[in-house]
Length: 472
Image (cartoon, rainbow, N blue to C red):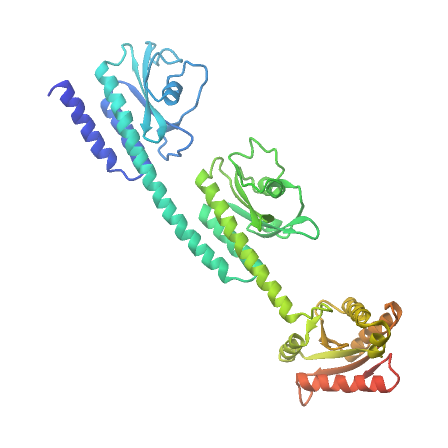
């Protein structure tokens, strides 16, 4: 068989075997084997650029040198073969080494370099042609495999995004969204740690709402601290290849976990940063650019889910809240009392009525009357516990349900409300209060009977001179 026939037969066999590979790792392993088979007397090596992360230990990363003497750098940068003596000079035998470096090149760019080093005499023209042919064929096969992997990754990501979006939209509680998103981020990126922070607009701080680093849960950070602060300032995602080598940003998460790789993205709602997502790994250069882009996309969907949950919560708040006083609506109070009577052992109710309220409106006008209602409602709110429920019962009447409180404790609350209203309102008004209680031992337990007893007690307080409380 002639030299040209042998060359074409080698190229045909190589092309067929390379293009049967569907993964970049498969292509690279086949290139390594092919080089050793075609150049058994020489030392061959495959170098890949930083854009790829081969698992084969015999494939090395390409280190760029800018002294102009490195053949591999020249071959990669110029996209054509580079021949000559390597910068290191002689090989292990002491003989002068000759090297040929050819680019692993495809239609979309150069992916790496194939190098063959021979002792003594240079490679012949046929060997150089063979090496160039391997570089071109292998480059095209590598590019095809890379595109195939990227298309599969894209399909997988689309399915993932669809599933995560569906699950996120099923939840209307912000806390549940944070917890679910944190778990999914760890699984999707095979990460060591994930952390989601929420911006508190009142305090202008970030609070950790979800993380598998339990020591940090509920931690609060200043607005300009760490990667969350950086995301807040720039509104741009971040990727860190090796935090240990470049730790210009202070980060408790990175220090506490010993993480070296990081991808982070802001959570945006209406172009405003409302939170931050951080994902880390202990290995340097662990996350890829595709991971970086995927996190940015997922952070966008997390933001949409949060906005939906917040709108739902605000709508619910508007439905169950009185617009003027900011207290709950009577329907909500009735529902909560009914629910608590089913599980508690006791509870009490205070009905508060502003004395001579019609006279206030006639004297000062309805606008001042509304201001008085707001003042009294604010006093009521400040006199009760977070677990108590204050509502506008109707007109100038307010009602407060106090779960598990005894009659004696309820009297103290009623007196505190009465005395503070008399002392703090402007123009000054007074209130009358009716108190009622229920306990598990009562013959009849219902919302209606509790309110009836409180209403009758209020009537007695009004009839006996106002500015007082009575017990029903």
